[in-house]
Structures are given as structure tokens and as C-alpha cells.
Image (cartoon, rainbow, N blue to C red; front, side, top):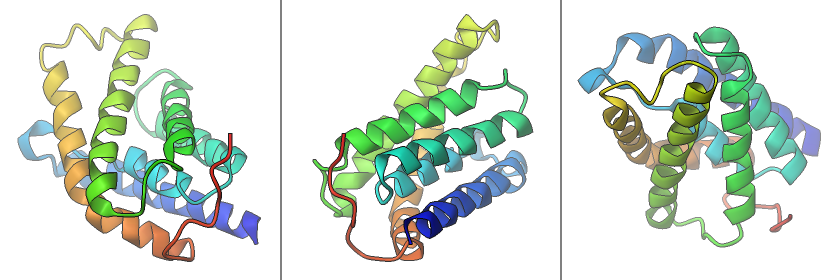
Length: 169
């Protein structure tokens, strides 16, 4: 049963990756798109055991690395870090979306900042971009707005209104 949930979570992350690289590659209000893969990893990591959440985050990031022009493993590291942050903090938050949405914003900003710093270390010159703040804040705001729709949908798809995984790690 647990593996079925992990495969379902991976399927949800793959669907988010497909939407992000197709639909939102063209539909970019204010020249920014939501970070759907980050949002989906946040949503699925709340419902999986720690090891499975990290593997799903890593595989989602690896898929993102293969589909966008970035050094291989950069998004994989970022998405694994997102899954780890969610696993560490999921026992402190309730399922109330008014509490989860600010957390989504903070984790998304942190993920995009980590990507920018690591990208600069690996020669991408991400931090030298003049619009870097806009490229971190707007996707985080879009994730904040999308969270009330995505998080309950993922919760329902993974089978339940309440988290079944106790705080572990």
C-alpha cells in the first residue's frame, strides 16, 4: 500500500513537471511561471514516509533537470532539499490551508534561492541576473495562490484528508 502511494505521488510530480514545461513555458504572466514541481513536491512530501518523500523529490528534480537547460542534478538537489524541509516541518503544521500557504511561499522562495546560489556556483551566473528577485518572488506568489487548489487535490489523490504519516526524522 505504501509503495502504491509513492508511485501515485511520483505520477503527480510527473504531471506537474509536464504542465510546468509545456503550458507554463508559454503562459507566463509578468514573465514568470509558477514552480509547480516545487509545489507538488511540497504537497506529496506531507503524506509520504521520509525516505519515499526524498526519493520522489529527487526523481522529480532529476526529471526537471532533463527537461530544462540546467546542470544535471541541480534541480534534483533542490527538490530533495524541499522534500527534506517539508518532512522536517510537517509535524508542526496543521492541515489548515491558511497555515500551509505561507509555508508554501517560504519553501518556494528558499528553493528558488538555493537554485540561484547553486546555479551560480556551477557557472550559470544566476545571481548576476538583474531580475533575480522577480524570478524568485513571482513564482512563489503564484505557488501561494495555487496552493489552496493543489494541496487538497494532492491530499485527495493520495488517499485521505489527514496525514497518515507521523512526524519522523
